[in-house]
Image 1 (cartoon, one colour):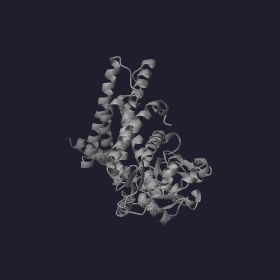
Image 2: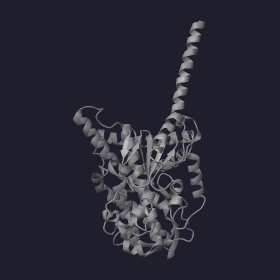
Image 3: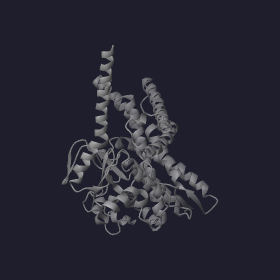
Image 4: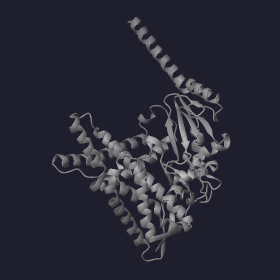
Length: 451
């Protein structure tokens, strides 16, 4: 018995030693090796700090930036990406390294397949959603020549209604609930991203984790309910709808029938995840693009007149100054050569789009000014052939909501400009900040005039 006890004790001790060694390697030895490797290549940046890394500095910078507003003509980088802006001032402009438990490199220099199928049903859905919003605005300005209005919540509702109708068709009322839940989930995810990361911490029964789990279950249950109704309709011999969900399900069932294997198609969970992703990408990008477009056109009313004739270059310029997503992140899984730099596995490469798209070396001395004229001959001419403009990302992982967002935004702005002119309200406070996308912290208060 004593021998067995000693054996168990020794075994436990060995396991604990192994775990301790792995923890030491993960939390200290490996990060220090990566730091040394990157420093040898001349990279500047903050030094590795155990566990917390730059999180405290990042949270402090964000809190300070959010505590005050700026003028619309001011540089928006210190407000929208405060930590990146501070790092540039401290360590230089090109490539920086910030050490946490995952290593981050800030690189500062440098369609969606269903879209054609969905396009036929998109325009009526967009028109209906835009018409409903404009009818509300016309009701507000009916008795007066003008009124003050925070357009941000209306634009959020507009984009959520449009994606609900496009993704779920006749079930769009249920889709609205999904939008509200995913918006709340995005805010919780943004809070989590600014907190201390401990492996496995998402499984702890904290208040935030419980809430996120509840929301996830509710979203899945809502989409599953819609899917279940569609499956019953298909089984009853009714045709599938031409919305996103209908196209996914029809394609999925066709593949299963052709291959005679239930495992060849997408699982129900995969269909649910596709719906969630498309819903979020299509909604967030559109509302962000529209709100900053209306804010900048309020500041520069002469461009409202031109926007009634040509809107593309205005959207391109808004996306340059206020991209929906302020940075692109990619994890390097194997040693990668980027130019003359050799980046080891385990590095998180972060490209700051806002900084890149306002670089005076790439865009000229007026890089921080609103000047849609730079895009009068298209993006290629404006960028002088350089890869310096990608507000929706680039390559095979380009934003799936890009074409959707641009088409909806064009229709919405065209319908708004046909009926209204607008200027900044005296109560407008310019405060761009990042949740998941770049949003106005205190809304977008404009003075709306009926034409």
